[in-house]
Length: 257
Length: 244
Image 1 (cartoon, chains in turn brown, blue):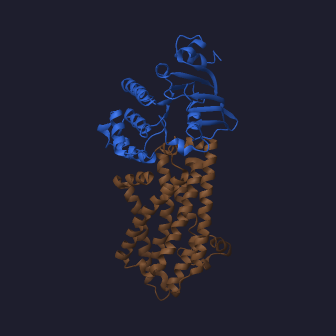
Image 2 (image 1 turned 30 degrees about the horizontal axis):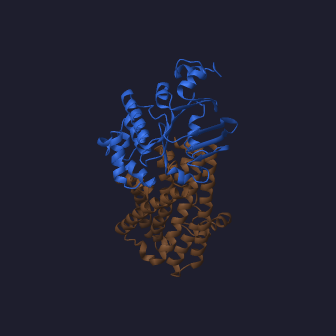
């Protein structure tokens, strides 16, 4: 609770931070929205699901925000040289991660609501047209974003501020194999095999199936969920092992001062 | 005879091949101010970090309140606290918000009352709504100290707490710490490069050099053991390796 408050206090009064939550999603929405509008003019030669681009963009942003909500909040504690104050307190590493997850959840709820509203306002695109099926898929994207965020946090702990760039970049590494804007089938065989182990690819394939055929892709959902739980387990274990290593090597103190 | 509240036995820390702390053993008693003294690289801060559970010892045991720190860190952490010149508060938060966060982290009961108390104690009530980044370094140090007392700790670890304070505020801070120590039977582990301060503050000193204890005792005893006229002279002898 204390850590959640710490991050909410930051956003309460900082206009640049609030802007950061909305700025990139808003720009993405404008650029991709107009591309979608443009492509829609060729409806006869392009598949009907081209409007899916906007939905895909909003959903990808959910994953990205979930990831950033954890990794950037962690960086805030490093930048403010506050990490030692936190870890010298009775706070457990697991509680710290939980608090960051909660922070990311609140941030992405706000961002996604605004983006969904703007998509409706500017392009008459209603993301909720997919219906309640959207919820389990969105939850899977959040889970995947969290596991990338926790992994990034572990890496920054271990390799210091040199690894900071991962807080922004690591999520994008999964984008080509997530089949966000195109189906998995367009990928070369090797990337197709890799994409099977990426939960977001099952989410986006599932969403396409709903739009195209109207059937609920339970297999895709279960696959995404199973892999996500495995990744959450791996990333939290990685974080905890790393936490032990950095305490042994004296790196926690170095990164925190 | 009081039971020790901190028992350190054979504490050793290697960073790769560098031996930062070598087989250090000491005890700390309730209501005592124990000064850790030594040149840069002597191992003072590493010892404090190990006592806080921020760095894992290579060898040795640490017992605080009779409990093994390795297994019961969170339980122990509720009753201790620390302040260091090298650690700060989130600079985009106000003084009061910072204290409120740490009061919650330390599970302080009657949070608002306690925050008011420490604000008054360190004379920072007037700046409670100021952002940390707008504070002077002296005010930031006082905020760090206020945070370190937020949970009414039984043991306080202070790493160069008066380093950035002007002589007036430093003197007030020392007097305040001494009075808090008296009133609450607080134990303080103290490091400073100000030798006069160490002499004035410490009930007992541990003199470290290259990670080892080279002298221990009351300030006068330590000065006597090196045949110096004051702690400053002893420190210079040790730092220049004339006495070791």
